[in-house]
Image (cartoon, rainbow, N blue to C red):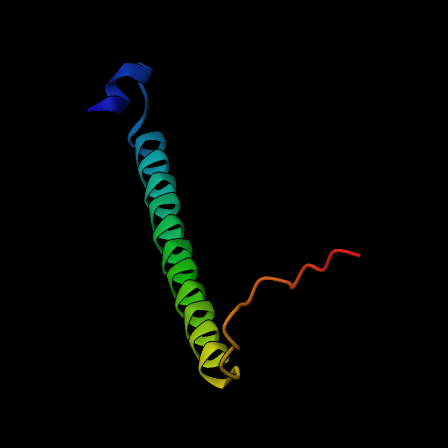
Length: 67
């Protein structure tokens, strides 16, 4: 286990480190879920905007005239 590389410690110290690591992992997962939800919201908003947009006229190159 990685904690053994820190050297001798009390059970309370070890438990505290493990609890902090667990909180970090939980917060990371929560933030990842929040980012996934925000990405889904942005994608849905983009789909709605595209669906509401009028169809674009086909592009035509500008007419050049020589004078």
